[in-house]
Length: 86
Ligand SMILES: [Zn+2]
Image 1 (tube, helix red, strand yellow):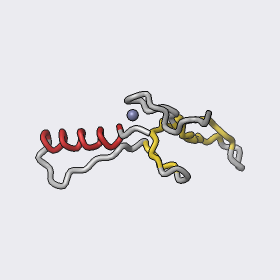
Image 2 (image 1 turned 60 degrees about the vertical axis):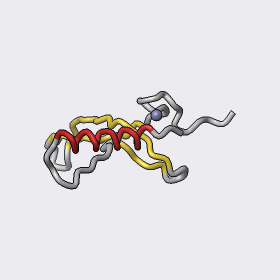
Image 3 (image 1 turned 90 degrees about the vertical axis):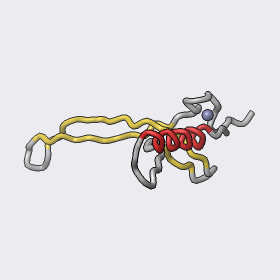
Image 4 (image 1 turned 90 degrees about the horizontal axis):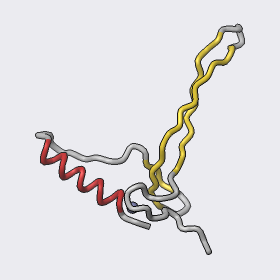
């Protein structure tokens, strides 16, 4: 398991502190989630699905749904997040 997310978070926070005249700057990846079983943090992308559906009155309404697609490999270094057992 790599440490890219922590390292990049620190670098971006330092850079934000240099560029912005704000106080108490912090940052975090919005598209990350923790794997409860393994206590690891992985990145993901959201896939948005849209469509139409008739409601009970027969009127067509817009529907949307999001699916989270978790990455198997770190997009920064290529390390496998949770190596498969051999
Ligand atoms: Zn990495």
